[in-house]
Image (cartoon, rainbow, N blue to C red; front, top):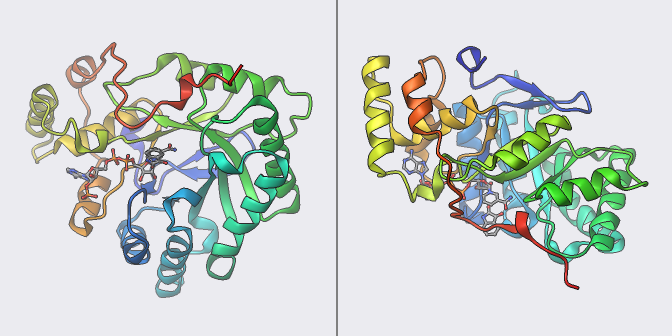
Length: 295
Ligand SMILES: NC(=O)C1=CN([C@@H]2O[C@H](COP(=O)(O)OP(=O)(O)OC[C@H]3O[C@@H](n4cnc5c(N)ncnc54)[C@H](OP(=O)(O)O)[C@@H]3O)[C@@H](O)[C@H]2O)C=CC1
Ligand SMILES: O=C1Nc2ccccc2C1=O
Protein backbone atom coordinates (compact mmCIF):
# COMPACT_ATOMS: atom_id res chain seq x y z
CA UNK A 1 0.00 0.00 0.00
CA UNK A 2 1.61 3.22 -1.18
CA UNK A 3 -0.22 5.27 1.46
CA UNK A 4 1.73 3.38 4.16
CA UNK A 5 5.15 3.93 2.54
CA UNK A 6 7.74 6.24 4.08
CA UNK A 7 11.15 7.40 2.88
CA UNK A 8 12.68 4.54 4.87
CA UNK A 9 10.36 1.80 3.58
CA UNK A 10 12.01 -1.30 2.17
CA UNK A 11 11.04 -3.64 -0.67
CA UNK A 12 12.07 -7.28 -0.86
CA UNK A 13 14.14 -8.53 -3.80
CA UNK A 14 13.66 -12.09 -5.08
CA UNK A 15 16.95 -13.13 -3.43
CA UNK A 16 15.60 -12.11 0.00
CA UNK A 17 17.65 -8.90 0.26
CA UNK A 18 15.84 -5.64 1.16
CA UNK A 19 16.09 -2.52 -1.00
CA UNK A 20 14.84 1.01 -0.22
CA UNK A 21 11.53 2.02 -1.83
CA UNK A 22 13.05 5.18 -3.35
CA UNK A 23 16.57 6.06 -4.50
CA UNK A 24 18.75 9.02 -5.42
CA UNK A 25 20.38 9.17 -8.88
CA UNK A 26 23.72 10.80 -9.64
CA UNK A 27 23.85 10.79 -13.45
CA UNK A 28 25.57 14.00 -14.66
CA UNK A 29 26.42 14.96 -11.10
CA UNK A 30 30.01 16.16 -11.50
CA UNK A 31 32.50 14.07 -9.51
CA UNK A 32 33.45 17.23 -7.60
CA UNK A 33 29.86 17.62 -6.33
CA UNK A 34 28.91 13.95 -5.85
CA UNK A 35 30.44 13.47 -2.38
CA UNK A 36 28.56 16.40 -0.92
CA UNK A 37 25.19 15.87 -2.69
CA UNK A 38 25.18 12.14 -1.80
CA UNK A 39 25.83 12.85 1.86
CA UNK A 40 23.11 15.58 1.80
CA UNK A 41 20.65 13.14 0.18
CA UNK A 42 21.35 10.58 2.91
CA UNK A 43 21.01 13.27 5.58
CA UNK A 44 17.55 14.10 4.17
CA UNK A 45 16.52 10.44 4.38
CA UNK A 46 17.47 8.73 1.13
CA UNK A 47 19.04 5.29 1.63
CA UNK A 48 19.69 4.21 -1.98
CA UNK A 49 22.34 5.81 -4.18
CA UNK A 50 22.35 4.99 -7.91
CA UNK A 51 25.66 5.49 -9.74
CA UNK A 52 27.37 3.79 -12.70
CA UNK A 53 30.89 3.32 -14.01
CA UNK A 54 30.04 5.60 -16.96
CA UNK A 55 28.94 8.44 -14.62
CA UNK A 56 32.54 8.91 -13.46
CA UNK A 57 31.49 9.52 -9.86
CA UNK A 58 31.51 6.06 -8.21
CA UNK A 59 34.42 6.90 -5.91
CA UNK A 60 32.87 10.19 -4.79
CA UNK A 61 29.44 8.57 -4.31
CA UNK A 62 31.05 5.96 -2.03
CA UNK A 63 32.88 8.70 -0.13
CA UNK A 64 29.59 10.60 0.28
CA UNK A 65 28.03 7.51 1.85
CA UNK A 66 31.06 7.05 4.13
CA UNK A 67 30.95 10.71 5.19
CA UNK A 68 27.28 10.38 6.12
CA UNK A 69 27.84 7.12 8.04
CA UNK A 70 30.73 8.62 9.98
CA UNK A 71 28.61 11.62 11.00
CA UNK A 72 25.62 9.40 11.84
CA UNK A 73 26.92 6.36 13.71
CA UNK A 74 23.37 5.18 14.49
CA UNK A 75 22.95 4.36 10.78
CA UNK A 76 24.83 1.24 9.70
CA UNK A 77 26.39 0.48 6.35
CA UNK A 78 23.81 -2.30 5.90
CA UNK A 79 21.04 0.33 5.94
CA UNK A 80 22.45 2.16 2.92
CA UNK A 81 22.17 0.69 -0.56
CA UNK A 82 24.78 1.43 -3.23
CA UNK A 83 24.26 0.58 -6.91
CA UNK A 84 26.63 0.79 -9.84
CA UNK A 85 26.46 -0.47 -13.43
CA UNK A 86 28.64 -2.24 -15.98
CA UNK A 87 28.96 -0.19 -19.13
CA UNK A 88 28.34 -1.69 -22.63
CA UNK A 89 32.04 -1.68 -23.63
CA UNK A 90 32.76 -4.00 -20.69
CA UNK A 91 30.40 -6.77 -21.75
CA UNK A 92 31.77 -10.32 -22.04
CA UNK A 93 33.14 -12.54 -19.28
CA UNK A 94 36.74 -11.27 -19.00
CA UNK A 95 35.94 -7.59 -19.57
CA UNK A 96 33.15 -7.66 -16.99
CA UNK A 97 35.38 -9.40 -14.42
CA UNK A 98 37.87 -6.55 -14.82
CA UNK A 99 35.08 -3.92 -14.72
CA UNK A 100 33.67 -5.36 -11.49
CA UNK A 101 37.14 -5.17 -9.91
CA UNK A 102 37.50 -1.56 -11.06
CA UNK A 103 34.11 -0.57 -9.63
CA UNK A 104 34.90 -2.42 -6.39
CA UNK A 105 38.26 -0.70 -6.04
CA UNK A 106 36.55 2.69 -6.34
CA UNK A 107 34.44 2.08 -3.23
CA UNK A 108 36.24 -0.64 -1.23
CA UNK A 109 37.96 1.85 1.06
CA UNK A 110 34.84 3.92 1.70
CA UNK A 111 31.97 1.42 1.89
CA UNK A 112 33.55 -2.04 1.56
CA UNK A 113 31.13 -3.68 -0.87
CA UNK A 114 28.59 -3.04 -3.62
CA UNK A 115 24.93 -3.78 -2.92
CA UNK A 116 23.81 -4.04 -6.52
CA UNK A 117 25.50 -4.18 -9.91
CA UNK A 118 23.36 -3.78 -13.02
CA UNK A 119 24.21 -4.55 -16.62
CA UNK A 120 23.73 -0.96 -17.84
CA UNK A 121 22.06 -2.01 -21.10
CA UNK A 122 21.73 -5.01 -23.43
CA UNK A 123 23.83 -3.30 -26.11
CA UNK A 124 26.38 -5.92 -27.26
CA UNK A 125 25.38 -9.45 -28.29
CA UNK A 126 23.99 -12.60 -26.71
CA UNK A 127 27.36 -14.27 -26.04
CA UNK A 128 28.77 -11.14 -24.39
CA UNK A 129 25.64 -10.46 -22.32
CA UNK A 130 25.66 -14.01 -20.94
CA UNK A 131 29.43 -13.84 -20.31
CA UNK A 132 28.80 -10.64 -18.37
CA UNK A 133 26.15 -12.40 -16.31
CA UNK A 134 28.52 -15.31 -15.57
CA UNK A 135 31.11 -12.85 -14.22
CA UNK A 136 28.45 -11.09 -12.12
CA UNK A 137 27.25 -14.40 -10.66
CA UNK A 138 30.83 -15.19 -9.65
CA UNK A 139 31.11 -11.81 -7.90
CA UNK A 140 27.98 -12.62 -5.88
CA UNK A 141 29.45 -16.02 -4.94
CA UNK A 142 32.62 -14.22 -3.72
CA UNK A 143 30.48 -11.88 -1.55
CA UNK A 144 31.77 -8.47 -2.62
CA UNK A 145 28.60 -7.82 -4.61
CA UNK A 146 25.31 -8.64 -2.89
CA UNK A 147 22.80 -8.60 -5.76
CA UNK A 148 22.81 -8.38 -9.55
CA UNK A 149 20.30 -7.07 -12.03
CA UNK A 150 19.85 -5.45 -15.41
CA UNK A 151 18.93 -2.10 -16.87
CA UNK A 152 17.26 -1.16 -20.14
CA UNK A 153 16.37 -4.80 -20.84
CA UNK A 154 13.30 -5.39 -23.03
CA UNK A 155 11.20 -8.54 -22.66
CA UNK A 156 13.31 -10.43 -25.19
CA UNK A 157 16.55 -9.64 -23.33
CA UNK A 158 14.98 -10.79 -20.06
CA UNK A 159 13.71 -13.98 -21.71
CA UNK A 160 17.19 -14.71 -23.06
CA UNK A 161 18.73 -14.41 -19.60
CA UNK A 162 16.00 -16.37 -17.81
CA UNK A 163 16.29 -19.19 -20.38
CA UNK A 164 20.11 -19.44 -20.10
CA UNK A 165 21.26 -22.83 -18.79
CA UNK A 166 24.05 -21.17 -16.77
CA UNK A 167 21.59 -19.07 -14.75
CA UNK A 168 22.19 -19.32 -11.00
CA UNK A 169 21.21 -15.83 -9.83
CA UNK A 170 18.06 -14.43 -11.40
CA UNK A 171 18.14 -10.66 -12.08
CA UNK A 172 16.51 -8.99 -9.09
CA UNK A 173 15.93 -5.61 -10.79
CA UNK A 174 15.31 -4.16 -14.23
CA UNK A 175 16.01 -0.41 -14.23
CA UNK A 176 14.22 1.34 -17.10
CA UNK A 177 12.93 4.77 -18.10
CA UNK A 178 9.38 5.13 -16.73
CA UNK A 179 7.00 8.05 -16.27
CA UNK A 180 3.39 8.73 -17.30
CA UNK A 181 4.46 9.32 -20.92
CA UNK A 182 6.30 5.97 -21.02
CA UNK A 183 4.44 3.40 -18.88
CA UNK A 184 5.93 0.30 -20.66
CA UNK A 185 3.28 -2.12 -19.45
CA UNK A 186 4.77 -5.00 -21.50
CA UNK A 187 8.07 -4.90 -19.60
CA UNK A 188 6.62 -4.13 -16.16
CA UNK A 189 4.03 -6.94 -16.32
CA UNK A 190 6.66 -9.44 -17.55
CA UNK A 191 8.93 -8.39 -14.69
CA UNK A 192 6.12 -8.75 -12.13
CA UNK A 193 5.47 -12.31 -13.34
CA UNK A 194 9.13 -13.17 -12.84
CA UNK A 195 9.57 -11.47 -9.47
CA UNK A 196 11.88 -8.80 -10.89
CA UNK A 197 11.43 -5.40 -9.21
CA UNK A 198 11.38 -2.32 -11.41
CA UNK A 199 13.49 0.77 -10.81
CA UNK A 200 12.19 3.86 -12.65
CA UNK A 201 14.85 6.13 -14.08
CA UNK A 202 14.17 9.65 -15.37
CA UNK A 203 11.06 9.69 -13.12
CA UNK A 204 11.07 13.50 -13.37
CA UNK A 205 11.21 13.25 -17.18
CA UNK A 206 14.60 14.96 -16.86
CA UNK A 207 12.54 18.07 -16.17
CA UNK A 208 11.14 17.99 -19.73
CA UNK A 209 7.46 17.58 -18.74
CA UNK A 210 7.56 19.44 -15.44
CA UNK A 211 5.42 22.28 -16.91
CA UNK A 212 3.03 19.99 -18.79
CA UNK A 213 -0.44 21.59 -18.35
CA UNK A 214 -2.16 18.31 -17.39
CA UNK A 215 0.54 17.51 -14.84
CA UNK A 216 0.35 21.04 -13.42
CA UNK A 217 -3.46 20.70 -13.16
CA UNK A 218 -3.23 17.28 -11.41
CA UNK A 219 -0.66 18.71 -8.98
CA UNK A 220 -3.00 21.64 -8.17
CA UNK A 221 -5.83 19.20 -7.42
CA UNK A 222 -3.59 17.01 -5.26
CA UNK A 223 -2.49 20.17 -3.42
CA UNK A 224 -6.12 21.13 -2.69
CA UNK A 225 -6.78 17.63 -1.43
CA UNK A 226 -3.64 17.50 0.73
CA UNK A 227 -4.00 21.03 2.13
CA UNK A 228 -0.41 21.80 1.11
CA UNK A 229 1.50 22.39 -2.09
CA UNK A 230 2.26 19.28 -4.12
CA UNK A 231 4.67 20.15 -6.94
CA UNK A 232 4.70 18.51 -10.38
CA UNK A 233 7.98 16.81 -9.39
CA UNK A 234 6.34 15.34 -6.29
CA UNK A 235 3.34 14.20 -8.34
CA UNK A 236 5.65 12.36 -10.77
CA UNK A 237 7.63 10.64 -8.01
CA UNK A 238 4.45 9.62 -6.21
CA UNK A 239 2.99 8.31 -9.51
CA UNK A 240 6.04 6.07 -9.81
CA UNK A 241 5.62 4.75 -6.26
CA UNK A 242 1.92 4.16 -6.94
CA UNK A 243 2.88 1.92 -9.89
CA UNK A 244 5.03 -0.18 -7.56
CA UNK A 245 8.31 1.10 -9.02
CA UNK A 246 11.40 2.23 -7.13
CA UNK A 247 11.83 5.79 -8.45
CA UNK A 248 15.34 7.24 -8.79
CA UNK A 249 14.94 11.03 -8.96
CA UNK A 250 18.11 13.00 -9.52
CA UNK A 251 18.95 16.51 -8.44
CA UNK A 252 22.24 18.30 -8.12
CA UNK A 253 20.39 21.11 -6.28
CA UNK A 254 20.53 20.64 -2.50
CA UNK A 255 17.34 22.66 -1.92
CA UNK A 256 15.34 20.21 -4.10
CA UNK A 257 16.31 17.13 -2.05
CA UNK A 258 13.63 17.49 0.69
CA UNK A 259 10.93 18.35 -1.88
CA UNK A 260 11.65 15.20 -3.88
CA UNK A 261 11.47 13.06 -0.75
CA UNK A 262 8.26 14.62 0.58
CA UNK A 263 6.12 12.23 -1.45
CA UNK A 264 4.62 10.24 1.42
CA UNK A 265 1.84 10.84 3.93
CA UNK A 266 -0.57 12.55 1.57
CA UNK A 267 -3.29 11.06 -0.63
CA UNK A 268 -2.98 10.31 -4.33
CA UNK A 269 -6.45 10.50 -5.92
CA UNK A 270 -8.27 8.28 -8.44
CA UNK A 271 -8.65 11.37 -10.61
CA UNK A 272 -4.85 11.88 -10.65
CA UNK A 273 -4.36 8.19 -11.40
CA UNK A 274 -6.81 8.37 -14.31
CA UNK A 275 -5.34 11.54 -15.84
CA UNK A 276 -1.78 10.20 -15.65
CA UNK A 277 -2.73 6.77 -17.03
CA UNK A 278 -1.55 7.47 -20.58
CA UNK A 279 -1.18 5.09 -23.48
CA UNK A 280 1.94 6.71 -24.93
CA UNK A 281 5.51 5.71 -25.77
CA UNK A 282 7.56 8.84 -25.40
CA UNK A 283 11.23 8.09 -24.77
CA UNK A 284 13.05 11.05 -23.21
CA UNK A 285 16.44 9.50 -22.38
CA UNK A 286 17.50 6.53 -24.54
CA UNK A 287 15.87 3.25 -25.46
CA UNK A 288 18.05 0.15 -25.49
CA UNK A 289 14.99 -2.00 -24.58
CA UNK A 290 14.33 -2.32 -28.33
CA UNK A 291 17.98 -3.14 -29.15
CA UNK A 292 18.52 -5.94 -31.70
CA UNK A 293 21.83 -7.81 -31.93
CA UNK A 294 23.84 -7.26 -35.13
CA UNK A 295 23.07 -10.00 -37.70
N1 LIG B 1 20.11 3.01 -16.36
C1 LIG B 1 20.05 4.04 -17.19
O1 LIG B 1 20.28 3.92 -18.40
C2 LIG B 1 19.68 5.36 -16.67
C3 LIG B 1 19.67 5.59 -15.32
N2 LIG B 1 19.30 6.79 -14.81
C4 LIG B 1 19.31 6.96 -13.34
O2 LIG B 1 18.13 7.62 -12.94
C5 LIG B 1 18.46 8.88 -12.32
C6 LIG B 1 17.42 9.93 -12.62
O3 LIG B 1 17.20 10.10 -13.98
P1 LIG B 1 17.62 11.41 -14.79
O4 LIG B 1 17.65 11.04 -16.22
O5 LIG B 1 18.80 11.98 -14.16
O6 LIG B 1 16.39 12.39 -14.69
P2 LIG B 1 15.25 12.85 -13.65
O7 LIG B 1 13.96 12.49 -14.31
O8 LIG B 1 15.51 12.41 -12.26
O9 LIG B 1 15.38 14.42 -13.78
C7 LIG B 1 16.49 15.14 -13.34
C8 LIG B 1 16.26 16.58 -13.78
O10 LIG B 1 15.14 17.11 -13.07
C9 LIG B 1 15.55 18.29 -12.38
N3 LIG B 1 14.83 18.30 -11.09
C10 LIG B 1 15.10 17.58 -9.99
N4 LIG B 1 14.23 17.84 -9.00
C11 LIG B 1 13.39 18.78 -9.49
C12 LIG B 1 12.29 19.45 -8.92
N5 LIG B 1 11.87 19.22 -7.69
N6 LIG B 1 11.64 20.37 -9.70
C13 LIG B 1 12.04 20.61 -10.96
N7 LIG B 1 13.09 19.98 -11.56
C14 LIG B 1 13.76 19.07 -10.81
C15 LIG B 1 17.04 18.15 -12.20
O11 LIG B 1 17.64 19.41 -12.12
P3 LIG B 1 18.85 19.73 -11.09
O12 LIG B 1 19.75 18.53 -11.03
O13 LIG B 1 19.49 20.91 -11.73
O14 LIG B 1 18.21 20.05 -9.79
C16 LIG B 1 17.44 17.44 -13.48
O15 LIG B 1 17.54 18.37 -14.55
C17 LIG B 1 19.85 9.19 -12.87
O16 LIG B 1 20.54 10.13 -12.07
C18 LIG B 1 20.47 7.81 -12.88
O17 LIG B 1 20.87 7.46 -11.58
C19 LIG B 1 18.91 7.80 -15.65
C20 LIG B 1 18.91 7.64 -17.00
C21 LIG B 1 19.34 6.42 -17.65
O1 LIG C 1 21.67 8.04 -16.12
C1 LIG C 1 21.83 7.94 -17.34
N1 LIG C 1 21.46 8.85 -18.30
C2 LIG C 1 21.82 8.37 -19.53
C3 LIG C 1 21.66 8.92 -20.77
C4 LIG C 1 22.13 8.21 -21.88
C5 LIG C 1 22.76 6.99 -21.70
C6 LIG C 1 22.91 6.44 -20.43
C7 LIG C 1 22.43 7.14 -19.37
C8 LIG C 1 22.42 6.85 -17.98
O2 LIG C 1 22.81 5.86 -17.37
